[in-house]
Image (spheres, one colour):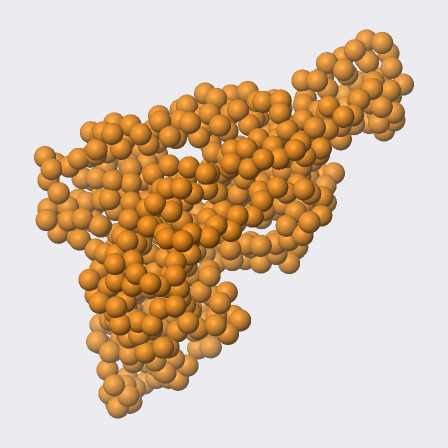
Amino acid sequence: TLVISPLIALMQDQVQNLQKIGIRAIAITSAMSQREIDISLDNVKFGGYDFLYTSPERLKNSMFLTRFKQMQVGLIVIDEAHCISEWGHDFRPSYFAIHELRKIKPNVPMMALTATATLKVQEDIIEKLTLKNVRKHEASFTRKNLSYNVQNTTNKLEYILSFCKQNKDVGIVYCQTRRSVKEVAKKLLANQLSCGIYHGGISSEERSLMLNHWLTEKTKIMVATNAFGMGIDKPNVRFVLHYEVPPTLEAYFQEAGRAGRDGVSSKAIALINGLEKNEFLAQVAAKFPEKDRVLHSYVAICNYLKIAIGSGLNESYPIDLKEICHTYQLDFSEVYNSIKLLETAGYFSFSEGFHSPTKVLVTIDHLQVYNFQIQHPKFQELLSVLTRTNSSIFENFQDIREEELGKRLKKNIQEVKTQLESLVRYGVVEVKWRTDLPMLTFLRERCTDRDFSLHYNIYKERKVQTEERSNAMINFLHNHECRSKMVLNYFGQESDACGICDICSSTHEVFSREKIVAFLENEKSIFEISDYFQLDETTVNSIVRELVKEEMIRYTGCGYKSL
């Protein structure tokens, strides 16, 4: 089975999961050397693997296509198939290369998978992949146990703190930026609420540790950006809070949907403050820098990577955007959004959330290693561990963990690294040092400034589509129709009112003043009242003011209490 997937991290995650259950799987990525790719494709060709994962960019490579012709392929799977649609929320032109596979093996069945495709996108997927005799398997978007709620609050941090104090279950707090992740986590930790953090700015080791603590419930709350969630299927997540909401319903549905996968009653609460429309408009403007600014970023990236005009085709580089911005005095957001536009225009492929461990290849044979150890005894232990534990290290680059090597050799990480660097200088090994940086692959040779182009129609259409998706999200947040029904309608499915979202709850339950007075037998804050009755803070404040005036409740300095 050949699986086409857009993200290196997603491929790595799925391959690891398959290998854990004894299925032979491998991923061909831009982090591998040409020799590694060559050997891996040979192994696939001769039946050494059941699953081969690769990116759509790889399908433009003549060597890959030649090997593909020789493979026994029973099924082609297109993961994240919405990426082939210009109407989708994550359009990637590189997906158009999939039609090359159809030309070579027209009779091999093809399966397209997506979790977030509107009817328009579904039709586009069928057309672009030239699917014939299509059988559509569509699960309902209905989540009968998941209550969608929108909470209007002037103090999101206080609301999250109050909610998490009352709800001791496993949950996720999603933020749009790393800065917000730090703000929320700091607030929770300052109030003795244990939480983990997860975003692209922390090391892979830290991410693994945070994830493990959350999965084993050493910490029950994860504060994260959208980098958190891929490949994670924890069934007993009881709540998902959005400190900041994503700009599309597709993204919101995916993130909110991580709650209640075991079928038990769960909540998804989006926190808003009335500024969302202006924020979304600003985000759309930021996502589409002017052409001259996109060119400026393109030139800076090429210069930083030392890519000459006419070169760079199919070459991949780890890329430190912060360093580029610092070097050329550029705005990070502008450079990042320029890269996304350049990806859409077919200049680059950009893989975020990428982690590649250190890889080592021994470049001399067994006898030469033995002789080298005699001549240089201080390297004997390291070379013995490398060659005995990785028999294939003489043919392929093998992943190593400096931490594990250090423990076995009773050395610190720096000593291990220093010895490996010495072995490189002696010509005994080649090393690819680990990196957590994103990977940028050039899909075209570097062009001159005069030849640089962003097709205006594509640029304009993408901007209009982005605005439409933002408007759909704003409509979801501020409308007074059943939230679940709105989500399903957006994805082209019919539904009755769910009966459990905040809109449905407020219409079928009368929140009498007496109920609130009874609830305030013990002191409660506005946030606690709001959360308990699933009312927005504006409504709660209005009711509370009336009750205070009528001397039915009193303000205690920290909250409200019945008299």
